[in-house]
Length: 68
View 1: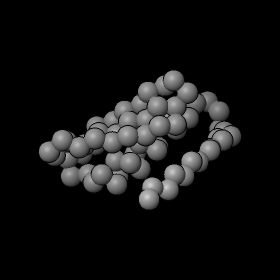
View 2: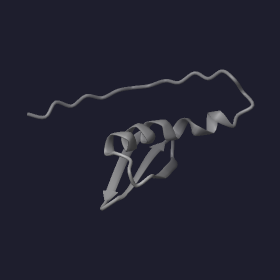
View 3: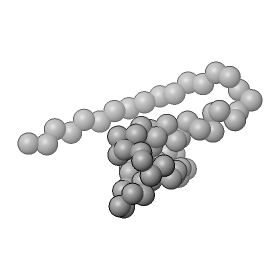
């Protein structure tokens, strides 16, 4: 999953790409960049809310790059 956020003056948006699916959302003008990143992480899980299934297995891999 790749996440990104963008802010232009008072407009803020979040997006995520997971398994070739693109998700995006426009946030309220008073939202912070931190809440935008939280929304970007949440976006790919939105389809599970509408599913008839009630149990899911989610596999996560994390990458950490230390910048010096």
